[in-house]
Amino acid sequence: MRDLTEERLADAVVERLANIPDARARRVLSALVQHLHAFAREVELTEAEWKLGIQFLTEAGQISSGTRQEVILLSDVLGLSALVDSINHRVPQGATESTVLGPFFVEGAPNLPNGADLTEGVDTSTAPGEPTWVNGRVLTLDGAPIADAAVDVWQTRPDALYDVQDDDHAMQMRAQFRTDAEGRFFFKTYKPVSYPVPKDGPVGGLLDLIGGHGMRPAHIHAIASAPGYRRVVTHIFPAGDEYLDSDTVFAVKDSLVADFREVTSAEEAARLGMPSPFLEVDFDFRLVPQA
Amino acid sequence: MRDLTEERLADAVVERLANIPDARARRVLSALVQHLHAFAREVELTEAEWKLGIQFLTEAGQISSGTRQEVILLSDVLGLSALVDSINHRVPQGATESTVLGPFFVEGAPNLPNGADLTEGVDTSTAPGEPTWVNGRVLTLDGAPIADAAVDVWQTRPDALYDVQDDDHAMQMRAQFRTDAEGRFFFKTYKPVSYPVPKDGPVGGLLDLIGGHGMRPAHIHAIASAPGYRRVVTHIFPAGDEYLDSDTVFAVKDSLVADFREVTSAEEAARLGMPSPFLEVDFDFRLVPQA
Image 1 (cartoon, each protein chain N blue to C red):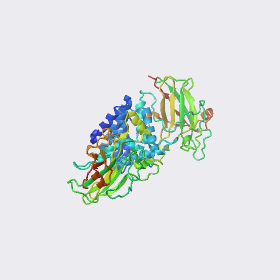
Image 2 (cartoon, rainbow over the protein chains, first blue to last red):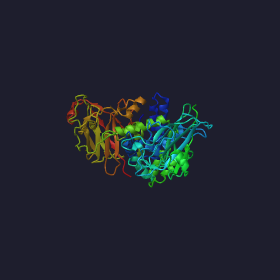
Image 3 (spheres, rainbow over the protein chains, first blue to last red):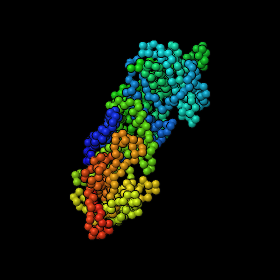
Image 4 (cartoon, rainbow over the protein chains, first blue to last red):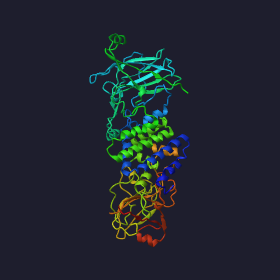
């Protein structure tokens, strides 16, 4: 293992990896080395560029914390997170498509009854929210209702922040629901709003270089699950958002875009306990049976 | 930019990079994205593996500090540092080959006269050093001497540590020399010893997985430079080291391995001010003229 040519070096590294006992780990690391070396050879990476890369990754690690993950953000902005999501959640036609989990999911959101109000206690002094009624069902691929399915939702407040971005992290605008006998879930919320990814770290510098707006189109995060079915982690995107075609993390799928339509009927508002007018959106999850 | 297939996603990311004003940055980042995606598609990277990678890079950044660089160590262990060095320092036949700089170089080592003793003040209570006389010349490719060339050297102490690995970082076993009219430099030192790379960080975990010893063969680091010539950053490896064929960072080149021969002549020892017996090594640098 001396006098390795540029072309031969990757093979030499891979030969050393041959001692890894686990076949899968061996395969993944070997492919990583081959692609990493192929990249460096293809562009003839300069020492200055290599140093920039080292510094970038170091800073990304160092700015990360319990409530911030810059390395994931890097993966997001390079489209890797969306790719890994797609690879791992191929679904048949008609099933609800997945998209990225994102960094704002929190375990243990409150279990609330259908019809609950997610806007309670949310400060709207800086940005008024648009009251929204969310209706949905969890269904089989044949359209049969799945009762007692779990639907976990979380989203931005009207001020474009998630609760975990506050210093105190008090839970807001997140809940877990259970579907009724007809597979339905429903709740009151504010329409989610588009928001920028954090731009004060190295990935912000990359976004500036790209000239990207760094925005994500508005969305309600959701996870739907039921025994015997594959869990789906996804988003519900309001139609018409200006960033749908330029999502910073490449996570938009047409099947996940839903109409948030205005309801002007005062009777309907009264029946649901909503102000008038309000927005209403329907979104059904169609789950794939477990293999 | 919606409904991107796994194959199409990398192209979509690259399309976004098209806004980067600098052509070189655009090319490097585009190639990085294509290779990163090709890797993930080829192995069908699982979410658990992706998370492990995120966590690994995050920890590598977080354990790095002013005196430790785990991301560089990762690059070293994957052979990337050696590759980048080779790509950037292609030299004609007969020129001194380069190898990796490593993390232990320090600016501002003392300027010492030829014949100086690098062992002064070095504690040998835990490991006796092998007194060594280093002789060398800095030459043109035709073998003509280059006077007043700079030769910067640094190496391990007999205890297998570099000075910067001490808490106080007092400079030891590093110096800058100038060649005389015949292009010669010479100094007294201890034979360098092989040593392990730091194994208490995430890269240590990777080395454990690989089953690697994590050792570097002994070497004296050197940088030789002179006006009008390309600077060469390299190592001098003692022949016979047990790790020459399995260097953890893939940095050994046959042309850099030199014989540290035993000198038993008491007269020669007395002439040089060395104990008897001692080791002696000759190593010439042959520099490439600047383009």
